[in-house]
Length: 114
Length: 115
Image (cartoon, rainbow over all chains, first blue to last red; front, side, top):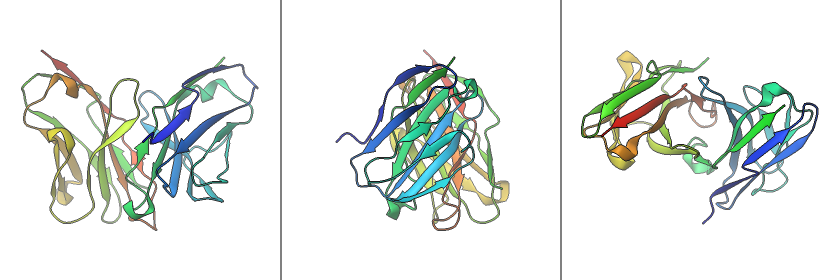
């Protein structure tokens, strides 16, 4: 039972490059979300999805895109990386009957933008 | 807007001592409240949650938390800390499902356990 799988675990980018952080879950959870974690700021919601084909913005969506073509996958795209996007990114999922609030987290992806 | 305050950035306790981590929230209605724990290099894991009913909730690893509406608090407690409890702890608040289902996290409290 893999839970929530994030790839890659580590990535270094140059300013202006684009990349995709992958997130997959095998629990058939309807709700998926992306957070970024920065020192002293806790976790901030970037984007979330309540089901396949449905996405919405969170607290800090600028510079990121998401899509949800399947229940299992929820990739996060950085269109043109900036140093301010250096962070640790967490994907999380939740079943709808938990109120979409009882989250299972992936192990995180550490991104450095030079 | 909802918010969470964890006033203690870093706490150090001795193994075997009791622990209380503070959490204060701001929310206009009855909140859903959560405590998550993050071990080094790992994602967050749910410790316990409060939705309704008994204001004292039990979680995993021997943790408990008490919801006090009058104080807008949801403090986490453990009677006897183990060295493996060293981690970062996050309090979170959300609205009821269907209204504001997005979680708002506090900034975290890092727990150090001395032997």
